[in-house]
Amino acid sequence: MPFSSRRAGLMTAALLAAALPYCAPSMAQGTPAAAPAAGAAPSREAANARFHARIAKLYAFTPHTMNQEQVTAKVRELTVFWDEVKADPAANLPRLRAELKDARNPSYFAFDGGKLLITLSKEPADLAIALEAMPRADLRDADNAEYLIAVHWFARKGLDTTRAALHMLDYPGFQAPNAGRGVNLNQGYALIFALFPLPEPRFVPALAERLRTEKNEVAQRSLALALWYSATPEGRRALENYVGDRSKPQAGRDMMRKLLTEAVPAKVPASQASEEELREMRRKAMGKIEPLALHALDTYTAQIYRKQQQQ
Image 1 (cartoon, rainbow, N blue to C red):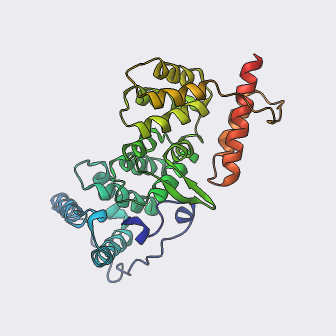
Image 2: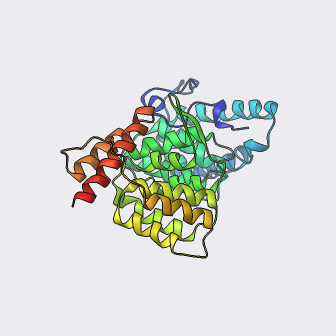
Image 3: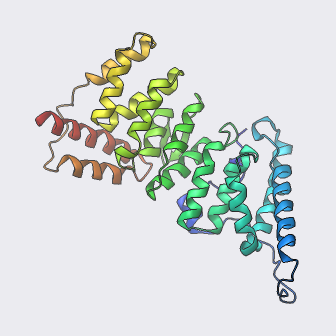
């Protein structure tokens, strides 16, 4: 079963604006700490080593293989760990950063540890560390909707979410039910929400390259959808190249051929805005995961295509 749904939502805007529902125990009582002694450096190294060993042991599990009783027990263990880390951020923030950068750590730590880091720091460098770790998470263990919400949040902040978004394609069954109020997203539209708050040049080249090499047909269709919605020359070339490659699955080629010949609906209202203004309005609309954003995605994309046809 998805494990993260047993804990606070992953780095949603609400989580970032308020404390998690886990109250850190009071661990700062007693006499003030003494000044560091001459042997402080070796002591720090030992403490860092203990922190690393604890993470390696604590996160050595795969939630999707666990039963309810095991999940409940593990939640309690992780809650204790979170509270202890949050009780002494001065000491633990540097350790947490270092561990999130270490790709050898268990995959669930990449998900849960990033969530913990964001509760402690909103510094741009720390956001980048948490985002960089996310593609190492096994999405069989993470609630897919929470993962998408997190990636989308980073995109709204202007961070490059391409790697984290493309990671969703590694899981053909990826879906994000209830990612927003009344919004249930399949893999293709989840990919779009994870990327489209950003300018197209930041992600279209990576989508085109992934389509060129992607073997999974579900991922191919998701990439094709995102490339078509990008309404860019590079996106169109990627679709044309796929259609012209006889080694590709016929169903995929037929789908992309249909996208390439898609006509702009006559009912789409004309716009006096420039193409770049339309793209900016679309980026702003995609900043929320809601039904209105899907409507705006279709409308602005159609208007962009119409502008291109008029040139």
